[in-house]
Length: 296
Length: 244
Image 1: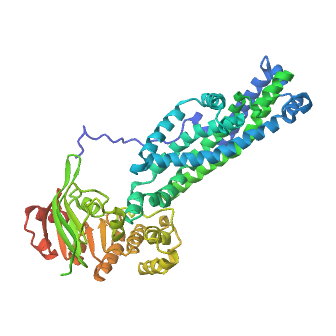
Image 2: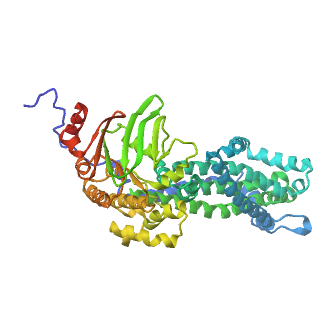
Image 3: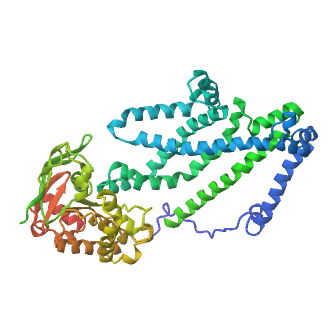
């Protein structure tokens, strides 16, 4: 009955064993393989660092324990700034900035999405704002605000410390980004949620506050934390305004003692700040993913 | 017959060039159940959305309790507080518990005190056998349970009229029964309902009036007996044959 030309199914018994080389990576051997490759790669990187022609010089100029400690504590008699104390400036700047960024970001996102005719001019302003501050490099914002605003000679506004102008620059830039994150979060809430809320007779504002935003915020927490990690790092830009924060203190040490270990100390301190947040963010993402996989 | 509470007169709705409602006229009386039947895309859902002002109409008039909904002075939120709507996809709020889902309308839209509404809400949940699960989140419930909560969420607003948009279409066949039983129960206690449905036996049981839509046109309306046993139009006959 079988039509010879149409019978395309194989009559052979297939073999499912992997070829010998691939077998080395299967089952328990996988652990051996991963250990071996880890040791090889990490060891290789260390070897490059230790055996490089300038390895000894780099160790002396960047990783000198004495200079690392000296730059960390500083020396006020010698006008030598402390990298450790400098970091406190980075910390207050990003803490203040984060609070404002969250508030402004949400306000901008909200303004861009309202349909109220009264808010029309604000909507246009919000769009222009987002375009401008997402488009200008942070570095330029720092320079323009840090040197431009004092030159305006307006009482109070023009008399602030340079750290404040740096903080304001970060707030201006990051609010634009965070507004977009919030907007994406709001759009990610299924349309049916809006329909259900409105059909209950909830006003537009109540729907936003009680139904849309609580769900949107949940989805945007990981990307938001990513932006905050980035914000924490960008406090280093305060140094270009001459603010003595961690990086600037490291640079001063480098200029006075001809040793760059202070910059490594600053890097390590930044890592100590950002790694907990990075790990926390990754955990949140993993947990969110597991929850979604479990519920579907 | 009770008084007419909803009156549709030559309602027209377009999405761009696509005319989805082509002059629909229909009356709904208090305590009456009207079922809209017709193929997907015939305009059943759009019609319901227009009554709830989730869509604006492009022609004709919709009159609810003697007030024209096309009047610019109408507040859509107030209209919606009196016309409950239940969707095919439940649309329960996933971040709120079952009880909070039921409370959110009365508390946030009607500004009633939570403590005042609480007992009412629990009674409603009791009615659908979910009192014990009031503190759980919707994703812990089956589809049928979620849809019953969604119906109760609308009822908590004490609407004058309930709009139901294919509320069993997204359910497993085994869960359809429990939702239809609740609707039958509501019909017997005099709830005024406008129901878009594909469940013909259900429509035959509960409706006082069955309306057949095809391509945005109201082809035929009548008692279930008239529509199901003796349809006057060829397209009604063909549709009923196909769904049987």
